[in-house]
Length: 231
Image 1 (spheres, rainbow, N blue to C red):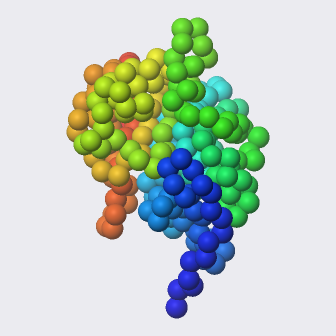
Image 2: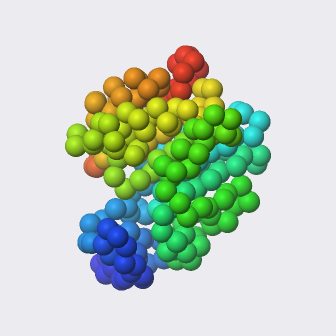
């Protein structure tokens, strides 16, 4: 018989109550206002997101990676496992409690990814980190990975959305080095978003990791250049 879920911690946020629940030693979920955002046992898309993006840039001498959204640290773990020791990974997370969870109850499921010497966690909106890197003369990222709990969808504002709108995508392109990678997690495919990515100068690949059950979407897009040798 499955063990019942227990509440480990609850944090009041601007969007409602953010809750960490667990059962056993390795089964966890994060919910907001009762809506489940992620589950540690359903992680194939998060792992694919980190792996596919970082595999592309792992051959660079000192790859610099930005991850937006820490969550349970699963995408971070997959990214680290795909990167060399010389890499630098910046994780932008809005809520300090999520960082504390990843250093506490969730630490073992990611082999303490947040404490890896390559990682720097900043309490900030990832859109601000992208905007800073997009400035002329600023240090660029080799990969930008968005692992937010809401991906692009049909109701996304095509102009003003801070992550998936036209202006935001152009800014992300400017924040990337030549041939850099932009990877995005989403619940379902969104053809309009794919067209916006292409218009912003990206070559786009769409993945549906796994077989059977709920299959989320992972977009891996390359800035400029050509598609040869990318996927």
